[in-house]
Image (tube, rainbow, N blue to C red; front, side, top):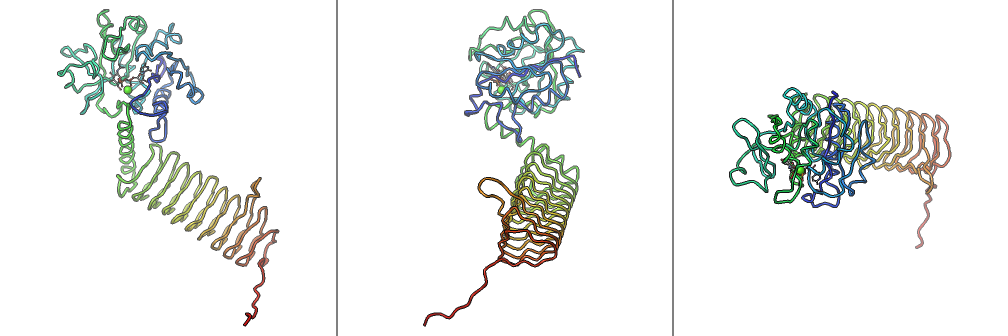
Length: 449
Ligand code: UD1
Ligand code: CA
């Protein structure tokens, strides 16, 4: 959808967050608030996206590059109308619709935004305000109507008692035509906060004889504003329970929805069961028929069908079908576990490819390694991959049997079908089909009487 440009206001001080970080960098389901708004707008492919930052949020500039994105700065935080004014230098010759959004209203859907823009074009209004009825209107600007018509918006702090009872609120999202710029010049800081309010453009445009209009939505969760950490938590919950509903309706079982965390972008197959304690962070896909049981943390990983994960920490891994992990395993970045692999308690893998049917059942560290099929790694096996400067590889061929408490001093290569005796420290390559014993001989001596 073209024929509109967007201005995203993100310069506000965000004092209510009580944070040293800019408010819009606070994360909702792992993604910064401002990025939620940008993604929602960008998916509609507008002509321009102008983001208004302040000098403290300058650090954000690099992370905000993208198609048609322009950054402008508000030097003094004089209010939302003054913030919008900063976009004029980019949009002054732009004649189409201008969608103004707040960087702290992250849940708005792109379909809602496109309906708002279409509606404003159809009605020909100079400003259309996105609004909704909410249970608790505290803190929001209230919609003051005259009969069926929008009259003005009054902020919580400036509202009279009767106005505070109104449950119809301003979302902080508006669609303007080019009369916006002239209206902004007329805004005065006539309010308790002595700020220039964007909301005052509504009565200004009305007085100038322009059409002003409301666009109401039913799903008021979409326009939740985040001003403090309580509202951030509420938004997290909204997103989580929406995700839970989506998963349940697609055939995933969730035993206790109150005691899991699941990111908005998780993909989970049917008949998988999520037990209490799961923390499924961003970038995770889980196949069908899996069991995710106990306190698990999973991020940026792919888990294929029919695998079981018990009480484990998994990051940056690709896990095949019918794999069993845990309890208490640490599967780190670059781990690729193929079908039917078993990783047991207190075992750690990193940058390790473990082929089909191999087992690392107890207390091992396998890093920078390639392990062939049908290998059994005994308890307490360590790949000694780091010499203090560089990392080195350990290669173990298919069907080899590694006894307990073996150290591989990498780089080292073990062939196929090798038997490594328990307690060995392997410093040199071993070719296929051999037995290797690399440990001190046991001596038994008589005790002095
Ligand atoms: C604003 C609206 C209110 C609405 C609510 C919806 C105004 C005056 N009020 O209130 O009617 O119900 O949003 O969430 O706009 N900003 C700047 N520079 C500034 C001041 C603000 O860029 O100098 C930005 C903020 O970063 C934010 C937006 O403008 O993205 C709104 O400002 P905020 O202070 O959060 O206003 P609210 O009190 O939430
Ligand atoms: Ca706000």
